[in-house]
Length: 64
Image (cartoon, rainbow, N blue to C red; front, side, top):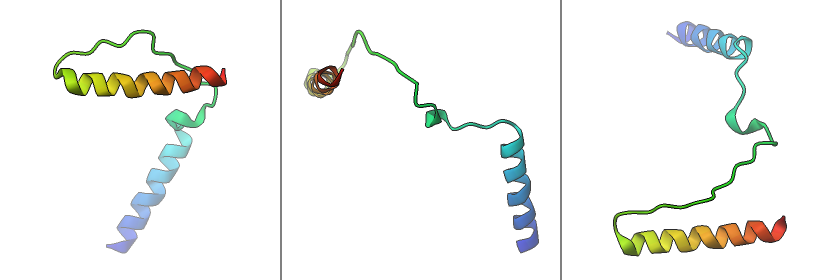
């Protein structure tokens, strides 16, 4: 049973390495922006979420 697991892991590793797999966040040049936030549903939750996002955006704008 252990041999099958080892073989499976080795084959999986070679498949991932040979197929050109690249982690999603490995590219450091990925930039994206959020220009507009639409919210619907519970007003209290939406207001709290938008306030937190705006604080985050303001702190990011300060670094630019």
